[in-house]
Length: 145
Image (cartoon, rainbow, N blue to C red; front, side):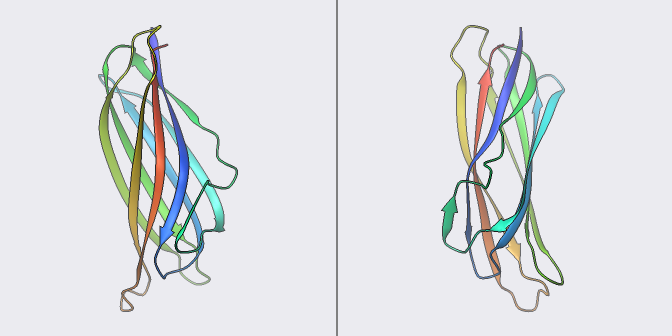
C-alpha cells in the first residue's frame, strides 16, 4: 500500500530590525528508496512585524505528498526561502532542513513530527549589518495508505 506525507505550515514568526513585509515558500521532498514526491507551499507578501508569531495568512492549505511503499523509513528534505520585501532591493534568506521519519503500515496510526525551521535574512547593502530571523513551525504527518 502506498503511504503519504501531509505537509503544513502552522506558524510563522520574525525577530529583527530589517522590515515587516514578508513573503516565502517552503518545499518538501519525500524519499523512500528514491524520490517519491514533492510539495510546495507559497505565502504571498504580507505584514509580519518583528516580535510577532502568527498563523500564516490564508492559512495555506496542507499539501499531500506521495511517500511510496508504506512501512518504510522516509527521508524528508525541506527547503525554505524567505524574502523581506523592500522598495528597491528585496532581502532573501534560504535554508535547508533534512530529517528521517517512519511511514506506518496501512491501518496503523499516523505519525506526526513538528519542526521549527529558521533562516537568517541580512539587510542589503551588507555594510549596514542588520539581520532578522524568520521562522516557521511546520508539521509532517506520515500516513500508511
